[in-house]
Amino acid sequence: MIVNTLGERVKMVRKRNKLTQVDFAKILGISQSNLSEIESGKSKPSIDVLISLITQFEIDLQWLLLSEVTSCKTEIAKDEMELIRSYRKLQDIAKEEVLDFVNLKLARYRRK
Image 1 (cartoon, rainbow, N blue to C red):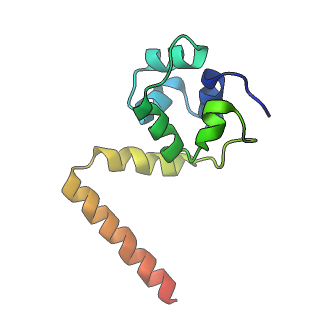
Image 2 (image 1 turned 180 degrees about the vertical axis):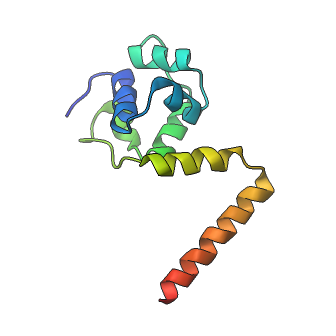
Image 3 (image 1 turned 30 degrees about the vertical axis):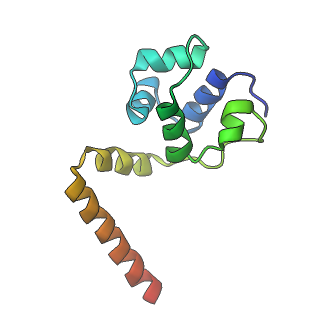
């Protein structure tokens, strides 16, 4: 599916992940009104917002900017989004502890 504008592609990502403008804007670190302007084509997203989109939602940059790839790579489940939101609220030391815990769990499951 080809979507003509950057704003339409941003909106497509949001809708495919079943997020409201408010929730999607929070994830991207922008206001809901800024997101609305981006989706309607009234303004362009900042580099930071573009980076957040491609990393958090595993979006192909070429598709996002130029609509030259067929679609978004994957969708993020609601529980995964909640993990991301919670992780972002942690202090750096707590984030390190979370990563250590995840790595420990991965190591245990690899041994089985």
